Amino acid sequence: KNVKGLAPKLDQEKRILFTISESQAMDRLVVSLATRLNCHLKLSHVLRSVTALLLHAEGEIDKRAGEAGSFSRPPNGNAQALQDFEREIGKIIAAGIRDAGPLR
Image (cartoon, rainbow, N blue to C red; front, side, top):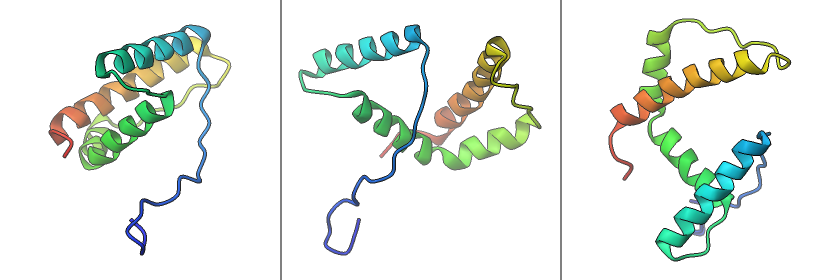
């Protein structure tokens, strides 16, 4: 929080590209979650929540990454290799989140 006790301004933008099926799946997830919670919800709310979860588990994710050894990121043109690479990163992140315990 800043000096006035207000939440810091959201002024940093990060860009991500999705496939059409990933984009549709993310939209379905947000709509489903909004329906279940009976509230207005945007993808940005979900992604910021996931960001908080990642930062909460940062130490455990780092530990798991250290245990995994070295990885090489494949070139952007190799979609299957990138998908496999990101799945392996996802496994490390999932284990770190599990080990970090509940978000408080």
